[in-house]
Amino acid sequence: MYDITIIGAGITGTFIARELSKYDLKILLLDKENDVSNGTTKANSAIVHAGYDAVEGSLKAKFNVQGNKMYDEVCRDLDVPFKRIGSLVTAFNDEELDTIQCLYQRGLANGVPDMKILSKEEVLGIEKNLKDTVKGALYAKTGGIVGPWELAIALAENAVENGVELKLNSPVTDITKTSKGYRVVAGEKNYTTKLVINCAGVYADKIDQMVNEPTFEIIPNRGEYNLFDKSMGGLVNTVVFGCPSKMGKGTVILPTVHGNLLLGPTAADIDQREDTRTTFEGLSAINDHAKETLKEIGFQDVITSFSGIRAKVDTKDFIIGKAEGKVNFINVAGIDSPGLTAAPAIAEYVVDLIKESKETLGLAFGENKDFNPRRKPSIHFMDLKRSEQIKLIKKDEAFGRIICRCENITEGEIVDVINRKAGATTLDGVKRRARPGSGRCQGGFCGPRVMEIIARELDLDMKDVVKDGKGSYILTGETK
Image (cartoon, rainbow, N blue to C red; front, side, top):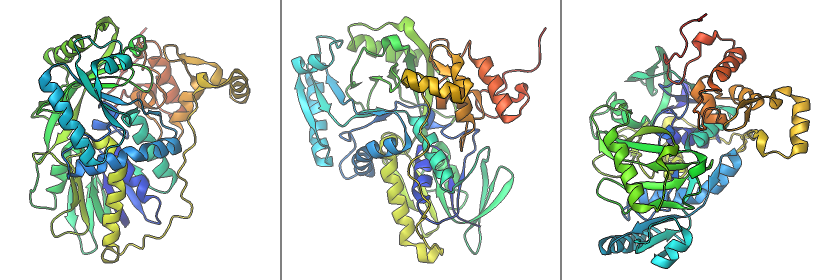
């Protein structure tokens, strides 16, 4: 029997798993997908929000500000790219100037530090590529950018290193109450557990309804993005928001931690929970926003478009707590923006909730004396000094073979991410961890070679190597 079973290995589930791995507990982390972070976590704006937009007194406001403060240490321990580059909410008319004043006051109420209302001249001093029609902006120094899927992968890796069991391709199809907890059916296997934590993203309401009366409904909301080549990465220096609307924080223009430019998202409620198509209307809308905001932008440098699904609820706040009348079932649901920022604080809060009932649940919560908060650093060959590169190649000649020319990724780096705990097993899994296929050609040249390496390292037939999800086969057989 497991002490705790976490359903969902996105950013929230992996943060909770890692936080619980600090204790001497038997923990199971389940996910229906082929890899960690394959839901909302792999397709979002990658912003660490300062915390001025959430309504004061809400869980979003509380955990946003708390979580923001935790990012430096977490990303340092897990060797994940994170940059505090600050954020701007731009105003182009008098009504929007009023809006940023309201956001400033809300930020003060939420306890957000280092905010300032900037004049037109001050804004253009920071962002020279903004149109001269800008009238002012709210600046928040603590805003930042992170690698979201890299963080979730690192959290899962560290959690597994510290004793958590990870089971992928394990969709939960049934949960039954038992005398000692629950029986969870996942991936055609049965698991018994004392406590369930529901972090199932867009399916959190479905999981909850397996054991509880319906109390909330997930509203899937699609956001579409354009990702630009690194040649466009220097167009802005900060996270540049448009003024928010009733649909969300508005379209954002920002650099990524790897030097690209990201534009988006849209915000559209949809019926299908996995409808991640992109649309002409959606991409046109975000492109129009960029034209209205920036003096110049080269749309010929878009290298890929994508969309992600947010899990919204009608209360417009996070749902975090024990299900009514049950100490052994905790919902962590409706974690839309600023969920990425709030996740480390949510994890601490959930652990505290469990501790309140630890005697009832029969959980000792003794310290995991072997807990190590740091994972083995990732290898970034091209960032090493020449002497270090030579030394590494002498140790392993695979680091002397460039596989991805766009991103300058070596075979040694690819082998490393495949053979780690919670390692890559798919083409996109390698891409998310080591970045081959993330450049201008989007894997057109390096993809087949990466597949060969995956097949070799995992002892697979190359036809069995998939792009991402289970069944997303690339090859069906040999040609002449």
